[in-house]
Amino acid sequence: MDTDELRSMKELINSNNEEDIRSSFIYYHQHLKHALNVSDDDPQNLRSSASIDTLSNVLKPEDCGLIAVKTLGNGNCDDRHSTLLRYLVAAELYLNAEQYANHPVLREAQSDNRMFTDHIDTIFSLLLTDESCDEFDRVRCKNSTVKFEARLTCRNFRWSSLIHLLALVNIMDRPIFSVYPSVNEGFRSLFHRIIYPVRQYNYSESNNNQPTFGIMWTRDGDLDSRQDSVLNQTTSR
Image 1: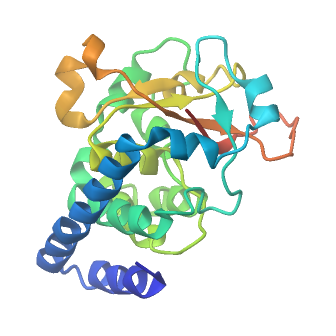
Image 2: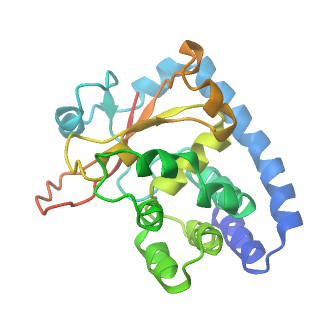
């Protein structure tokens, strides 16, 4: 898959062509399932191709037993499948906008007394990229903002946010450990959690439903010391 397909997906989203978006999602999702099966069959190859991320391992919280490895710091952190994942995440967000506008993590964070706010709109805005946060401030509609984020996702080499991780979990149909260092306690509980596919939330405590890898919010050689400076993503395995 190349950037032409991303442009095609953006055009489908702009024209609200839900039928074609859904059929394209189903077709390319089969490609992802095959890629995931290959990765599961040869995990040693994945480890050997990655280098250890020394800084992230220093920042890693104590409850994370995974090892942080380096990814590309250019917005396309998975160089093998980045365009495919971006394409599927864009389609997933568009097709299931209401689900992400009312995702279970929002209510969980709202009821967590460690959060700096219990205002659901403010918590929702933390899921978004900066452009989509501005859009939400303008329209005050969660569903349309998620679809706006879906359209932005079609830009290659664009940094992701937590809402993309929520979508990725559902696309891969497996839990992912979202790892956040022990800083920014006012919103850390939203970011530092095991994220389950929505359909698996009722079974989230099962020992057979634990994540095998994580995505860590960290730095790429940039220790920004400003208060409440939000971290970016790398990968832990």
